[in-house]
Image (cartoon, rainbow, N blue to C red; front, side, top):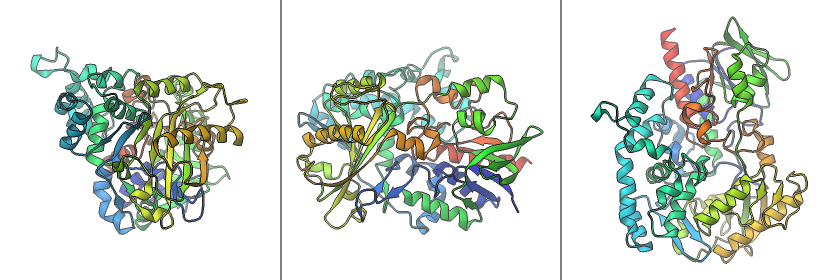
Length: 531
């Protein structure tokens, strides 16, 4: 009764995508989830007031919409009530001095906006895209491949070495991998344009002055042009619900409220799992863990013989800084001075790139930033069903906040021992909302309810976030690409041949992109064919 082809630990969207492919191919799949329902960071709840549906964690899905899993299951997901609403202005920036810019999905419109800000900036934008264009298709293809695979190795070799001179020359792509976002935007004359383009690297776990962040500026710009800023009608969790129904309709089984404590390994293969209540489930073909490498190798495989290098690297797996997410119920829609912002998906509020990086530096030093810079999004602009008639919701996403602050850069908030107490949370929330008020005149007056997600909320909800890192492990250069999840395991395949990893700790990383779920599904199906 307790035997399945594949057992999956966790049920985030990547795990659900793998399960959708496997069950479609006729495999029996059991998913074990510790929370009350599947979906991981896809969760929509009435956090503030009845009728106000907030995306507690993840909100927009641009990378998922342009990926292969959505293309493969679009019809089936739509049949299960998943419908996306989108905008032609995915992002923008509002500066404290009143200057604004919007990011359009067409190169022509974006160029016009750049020229409006500074007469030479349209040409600078064109040069940035032209420099990246020859490599774009190869780079985007890597997002759907295990980087340690032969196919990916060939693409990486092509990107890093210039075949025209016998592989002895370095193409322009290679140094861009080591550049910073600040370097990439330095040729723009307009500080508004610099802030709009460089700020987005923080949503990819990088910072604008960090080595390796530069390549993500054109890459993110192209991704936003391709995908926009789509949100599921009814809330982000609609994706999890549609995937869950699809998996179950195809014969998959999902048990919630079930914590896996141990992966059972015999004769060098994963043969099953044991839960916290002592129940055992047996896997005929594979076990797939949606966990970080620390949990996998130090906890789930604590009693299994594993290479000392892997065990040591798992102990050294690093988490990044935390996130404070403020959910607001509003009595009316935000009244942006720039009317275009009623159509903008997720703009940044900032006083410029220097102020942005200063706030990040304070977070890196363990301090609450004196002047936080962050994104806002108002889902009710695109989806009025998310709030009662005439009302609105808003989310303020403050990244790069210390998980346990050691002090306050402004010297005004007593952080105590760094625990996010109600008082600390309220004081920091007031600071963030005061910044919003400088950009949107009817804030804070329109606020009728609020709920705040802090790093410790995130840590309690999802063990993959360590102390509260929403990105499932630091994405600095030394823990990215082929160094992820671990240098000794640059793959979704582990040292145990039928044990796989997926999720934010694996390539292509965090966010609602479906990449690792797709990659692991293809590996498992290919493996089945060869058995």
